[in-house]
Length: 328
Image 1 (cartoon, one colour):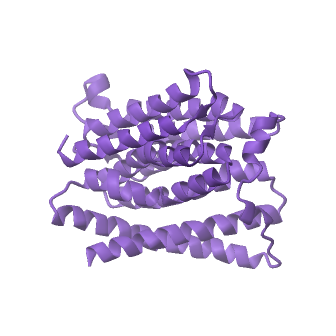
Image 2 (cartoon, helix red, strand yellow):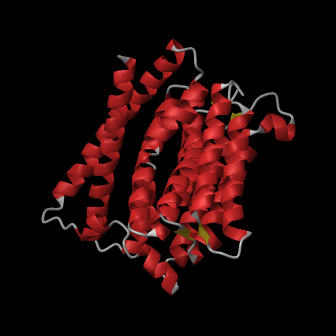
Image 3 (cartoon, one colour):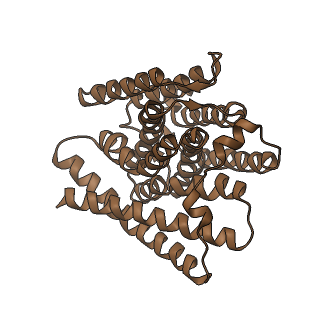
């Protein structure tokens, strides 16, 4: 039954996230909020709502392995698996915003995560704990990112950026609602579904881990992380098939930033996250994945991630899963 609850919980989380984003976007459009602001906030946070619900519920239940493993595993999955698949479909062009804002903020988020999580390795502390103070620091970084995004939102876009962003959420952008109460009801229903699905998903994942003798960490960074990254996968793959490479890449890096600064920061406010069982290989792989993205973006003259690099990303992800299964 736990496996059935795991699947049902994931479906509820994904359905709830979809209704939440649709409803919030409709309300934003109703009150005249610009497409750029919607893209930076509602869409970015919306695709990260499954991670948010699962991590918050994990933290509320005192399960730091689920709360942190979900974020670390999702960020690894976003870069290596999702960008790898997207690049195989169509090479991902790097826009000006990707170069000067998105990828540097991804690097900053990874560095900040390691700084607040690896207390033993950095300062010789007895335990690795993401404390309340650490959570506040991460949320302050999130505030800086949002403010910076708003300040740069009105700057003229280069032609390449306009082309990359012109198809952002084509269905949701054009959908109009005659009654305001309907999208509001969608928001409420989406939140309720998210909460119920998140609770079911976390409980089932924990029971499955215990039943098969696999640690919560491995379950969190693989099954849970891949499951909660489905919205990012769907968005990026669809964008790549439409050759909307700016959305495909921006969706992933934006999600990674939200995951660390907002979701992990918020989780630490719920309860301090003790990482006693969290293996270093997960932090190391996150750093490797982030550096690989940085290398593709900044060290070659071409401004895109091609299919060869997509294959390399996928091979790295497979190697990571093999190492986890073999107990590294």
